[in-house]
Structure formats: C-alpha cells, structure tokens
Image (cartoon, rainbow, N blue to C red; front, side, top):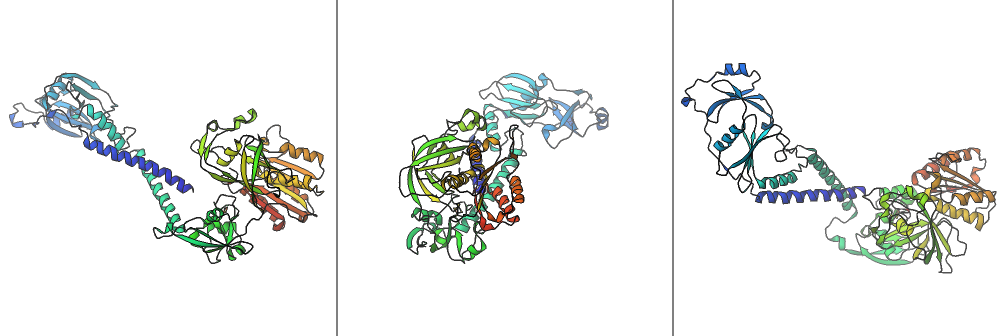
Length: 612
Ligand code: FES
C-alpha cells in the first residue's frame, strides 16, 4: 500500500517537472534574447607594424613570477601582455594581470578604457549612459565570482554589457529579454539556487525521486499482474460463481473476473465477516475454495496449516476470476438495526463513548465481545469534535480544528455493553487524529465522534467470534486489554458480573500509555470496591507523579499473577488490544503452559483498518 501511495505522489512531482521542462523549452526556443548590438571584427596584434621593441618573456616573468600563461593582445590599439596568474577550469574563475608590452608597466582598466574598449568592440550609435565597476554576486550572471565592469547603453532594449575587470574580456551582452531568459533557464535546469550549472542537489534529488518512482511503479505493476488476468481486455469479462453456504444452499452470483471475491460476496448479500476492510490482517473473511489454489502470504499468516490444507483462503485476497466454487460460513444472527444516538462523550483524550438506542427488531440479540458494522456515506466532517473537554484540549493537534471531505467507508467497532434487553448499544471509539498535516484523520472515528445526539444510523451485526463460551461454570476469567481494546472486555465484564452475576473470580489487566488514557477507569474501580470477585489492575507505561498503580506493560503484573496462581488451568483468558501486545501476552501464556484453547484473542487489525 505504501509503495502505491509513494508512487502516486512521486509521479505527480515528476509530471509537474516534465511539464516545466516542456513549457520552458518551448518558450526558450521562441524567445529573442540575442544581443541587440553587433560586434566589430577584431584585429590581432601585427608585430610587423610595431616599431617599438617589445619586452621579452624573460623580462615579463621577472615582473610577474606567478604567471601561468602569457598572451600578447591588442588592447585599445596598443600591445599588451595578458598574464594569467590563477588557473581554473572555468573562465570566470581565472585571474589576469595586464602589462604594457613595451614599457612593462602593469595597469588596470579604468572607466575611460572601458568606454573606449566597448566602442572599439561593438557597432552601435546609441549613447553609453553609465559605466560602473560592480561586485559579485550578479543575479544575471550567477557563475561570475570576480568584479565586472557594467556598461549601460541607452537603446530600446536597455542593452548592458559586462566586461571582466581584470582582463577587459567581454563576459555578456544582455538586454531586457535576458531576465526572462534567465528565469526560464533557471526553471528549465532546476537551478533554483542560481548555481549556474547542472551540478546541484535539486537535479540529484529529482533523479533519485524518479528512480524511486520507477521502482515503486514496477512493484505495483508486478502486483497487478499477479492478481489480474494478463490478457488485456479480460478485466471486463464476467463469470458466474457458485456459492455454497453452511446449509448447503447454492447461490449463483455474477461478477467481473477482476472483482474482489469478498466485495462480490458482500454485494450479493452473502454475509461474510470482515473486520479489517479487506487488507488481509483480520483473518475473518475465510472461505473454502479448491485446496490446490495458491496460498498467498496473508493466507499463510492468518490461517493454520490444517485450514490451508482443507482449502480455507482469505476472500479479500482473491478475485472472482481465480475461482468458480466457494463455500462460506454465513452469519445467521446478522441483522441491520436502526439505532438513535443518545449519548456521545469523551472518556479519555481520544476515546469517545457512543450510546445508541435501537428500536427494532424485537428479536435482536448479541453476545458480549461482538462487533458491529457502520457504513459511512461520503461527505464532510469536522476534525476535532466541538464537545472536547477543556482538560483534553492540549492533546489534540491544532490542525484538527478544520473540517475535511471523506469518501464512503465501512468501519467495525466492538460493543462495550451487555445485551440486557433495554435496547442499548454502547461503543468505545478511539478517535484517530491525522498523523501529519499531509494526511487525513481517521474517517470512521471522526464521523461518529462528531455525530449529534438524535442522529439515526443503520448498524449491521453482530459479528465476531470473540465472546464468552456457553459452558464456563468452573472457570475463572482473566481479561487483558490495551487502549480502546477495552470495549469488548468491558461488555464481557458487564455480562459476567451484572448479567450472569457469576461468583467466579474475574480479573482485568488493562494497559494504556498514561493514566488519563484509561477508559472506564472509574467504572472498573467502583465495581472492584463493591464486588469481591472482581480485581482490576490498570498499568500505564508513562506514569505521572500522582499515579500509584502499576507501571510498565501489562505483561509485568500478569507474570506475577501467573507465578502466584496455582490453578491456571481453570482460567479462561480473553485478550484484546494492539496486535504486537496481544502476541507477546499470548506467547507468555503459552510459556506458562496455558492450553491454547483457553485463550481467545481479538487483536486490532491495524491502526488504519480497525476502529478508525
Ligand atoms: S477482510 Fe480479509 S482478512 Fe480481513
């Protein structure tokens, strides 16, 4: 995904630069910037006409011991030795001394000399208005690093002539068009710092970006070729797919061969779970196809070896053209309910609690720990919700104050209460501010976080297998959560302690970054005070001065708990939180010889696909 994102933006940059090259190249071809005055034909030094005896090179070297090269030139009608005293590859960096070739006297050119020199070298009738010695840097001649004489001519093009101060050489004849030419040259050669050459870091950076764009483009192309038919035009070809549900009923559905298998199943109302929005990270969208069909990386990561052998694959990772018969386990409890928002408040700086009242249907039931699907239409929503309490304001970036447009999206959120017949659904939704000003905030969380009381939504569910078992009478419950992963655990605690009123021990380990990030903290503390079979162990990784609880990661107090527990085999473990944390915790439990069947995990798919 990142390479596609990168490729798109790099392609935009390269396309803009190509347009600049094209347009400036065309304009430069059209622009008339040639000198508007003509040069006279120059005569060299004719020694035969010179009666006077010139000084010898030996004598000259005695006067100028640092001479690198010596040239005899005709300057203002007299013979002059032009001696180079400093060498460089570039003419503009060389320095010269001038000596009268007869007397050996060293001299510098003055204003009168320059006027005569210009008049002798060019044919023009307009008067010279100004002659001045100017010092670098020169915006018109960025390469020049030594003093120049500037001669301004009063003509219709505002011609001005530059001569090198040390040698009297003509450096440039410019006019009013030259400024435009320089600007176009600067854009054409990306010489934004007026270095006067190609050898600058803008060009190198652009070359590097173009290389990265090419590599990401090839990567993307290979990905497309691996998932789409190679024959051009076949993308539009349709085919029929046979879908067999868990009651052995057959459904015939039609789709384009390039349609995503998960999308086509959902579009045809075949209820199949998907928590990560099709990114291959939740493992919910499993279907059965031919066991010989290729196993992709996401399949291997999300499914066990036995499942792969039995033909299980992730529907979101396939296209219709890759299969003909699909077996699915449909969710028979699934219903769409109409729910009205009755409360929307911040629990922590980023977690909001949304409480919905649903009116229909009567038969609707859900199990604690399940999650629901929210279909959000495209539109515009606010950044930071207006009801953000003053005490949380410092946590929100300033850029979040503005609104933004968003496409239609589907998001899934875990329920945070039990099904008690009163007709309420509560969700703890973590708001995801934009990671930078270039990116948008989480769409789902911002749309829902900004919903007004009284808004009515269509919510589909329940989804998910993260729920309490039916038979647990001899068990003890250990729940481990992180961040907004507390929502399904809270619904389980609600069900166990207030719905089922169990007498077994229920222990909650809840990890967050700061004490202020612990959602429902007071609710858990209150229950711990009133019910003897509930223990609450909040853990923060960044404690404040007034925090007296555990610090670090949840693994620390959990390890102590496991060390001290003598009947670990009587415990059921429920884990929900960031996937890295859940993996660590699960590995630790297995190290303590906990039966994997006693561990139920609900990991966040990723910060961008789950609960955003
Ligand atoms: S929808 Fe396929 S893995 Fe999540």
